Image (cartoon, rainbow, N blue to C red; front, side, top):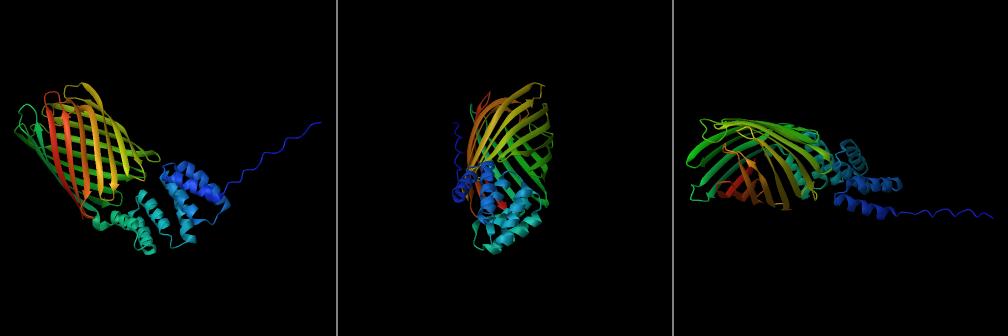
Length: 353
């Protein structure tokens, strides 16, 4: 006698438990897993606006802008006062380079939640009245071996030119080994979908050690949620010769954008035509809304004064928001060079207007 096997029991998943698990996945940086679970929740509870909002946020983290927009739109159709959904629509428009549309959605979010700090911060970031920034910094370096100190002062102005375009101008005055140079640079950036590209030109008149002329270009592109590929290239003519450089790298955005990590492979063809390479890594942690820490380490060739040398350096710094428009910066850098060591202290102030 053949006994047919009993069918496997059907496991019933509680939609609420699945929803909570999906939110935990999204908050932990696992948007792919969150999407799968949220789609199951919505199959059981199609009118659940909280689940649909979180689906939109997970899709946004994956740069799936069309489906994310549809999810947020479905939420505001069912719940017109759901501020987070209007904020999601604003961020979709922002990533597409439609800043005018993003400002409109952000205003809808403000009307739905007048006291929201997140909405206020988003509106400030999108505000055309705060589209420009001035940065001023000064640094002084102490060199070993009784060599004279270095000084550096930099002033830059940057701002939004059009919806997807920003530009900047900078002037940098430096003194090294009792020689002085003034370096000028202009730069243009453009947002392209989930990434951006830039080009910059610069040079110093009657240069002693800074580039007589320089061309820089590069950009970044999103390759997966929270991870970008970067590339920077430069061609600089110094009084001692021409130096070219190519730096591919990766940049990660973690912990709800509070932690940024980046690493680059440094490739240089120096003024003598010799290829050299090394690496550099940086980290930035936004501890609070007005305080961030910066760390960096590099072991790579460096050509800022026209003579390419191997440099091992580490740095630490902090950005302190004094107000919504002013930020104070402080930094310390320690370098081990071939012929001497260098320790630098820098101070800076940024103003958005």
